[in-house]
Image (tube, rainbow, N blue to C red; front, side, top):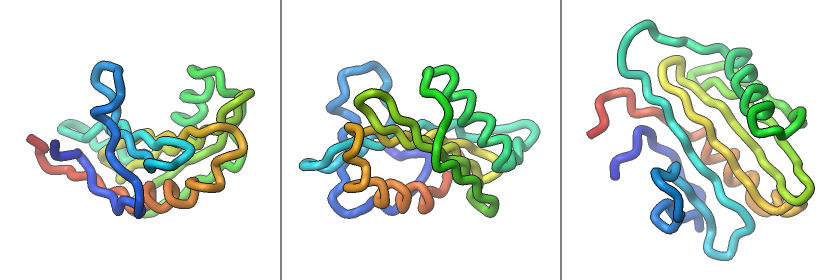
Length: 143
């Protein structure tokens, strides 16, 4: 399957999407002996007015995501402008750690989430941050 984006996959991370027992799962990576998983959901620009979303718009999307999933207020919020715009934040539940990123190149969008058991995130979070920042959308038609 040709993905609507490219990334530099960190060493030891493998595609486990086909192992997920849900209909139409997002592209998912994990490590065989890892503690979490990272999922990529993409909305690719096709036509019409170019969204050209700012980091503040992405932050609004992140806050809406948190609200709709009852995650509370994010911590460690990051927003970045540039060719790849980013808004990210951490969420903690009783037993889970979640880092969510909304990213855009001004045309297409991605929601990327990393989830693991609470307190285990330091083992993999830097790999996920690297992969997120290397994502590039394929803005041509994907077959």
